View 1 (cartoon, helix red, strand yellow):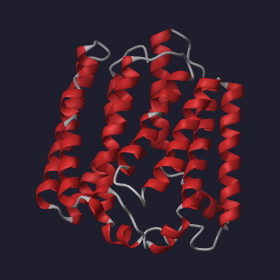
View 2: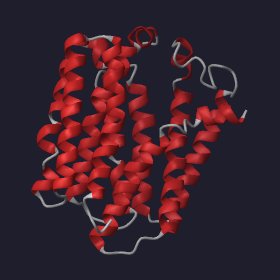
View 3: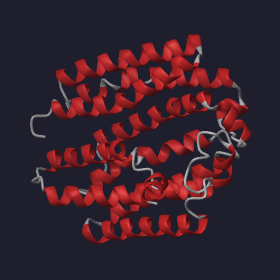
View 4: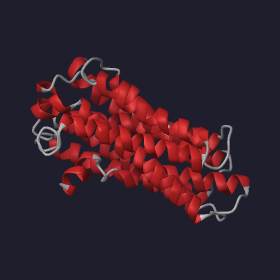
Length: 286
């Protein structure tokens, strides 16, 4: 039963999500000159992790019928009969509300609002749009783009150029990431009634967009260096991993095979973490 709840709350992607939040939190501390406190960071990670895990649970509740028609998701707890839809709904809502309440009380209301918008957009906008509109991928990229604001607002208020840059990079990253998943499981998505771009406008459109959304990273990686947010260590690493991303997406674009799709998918899983960690390594006050 414990394994079923681990699958329901999808704990596996949480560390990568937390990396974005933690990086923004530490960056905010460096910008404001406030001292680092383990207690504050642990509270932020736990409450944000609870809310995001609950979002995944609610997503599975609302997609339970589609999940039952897809081979890759038939083993999830609800379609597999390990957890009833009602229990999944109440568990998801309860953990989501608890995470937000703790953030509101222990951190501040702005952080709780950013977390609410992140989860709310994912569950109540992106999830229903997946079976209705090709715009679902763009809408679904917004929750991820809000992650840096959760970390930033846990320390200070206002808007920072670096946080906006992080949000933009995460937004752009998610689009080819989603298209690759659609390519790998296209037959199953079609059987489940998916209306993502590859199934509405054709695969050529999604291949082109995967290419262009990856190429946009080239000028964007220079922004932290140009605005003196980070230095040459970051720029060297960012240039190297971005070149690798371009090689991967070009192979995927030209060959259009399952093997190249998997390689591009796996490479992009480490792309953003390496990019952000290299920036942290280049700031001596982190």
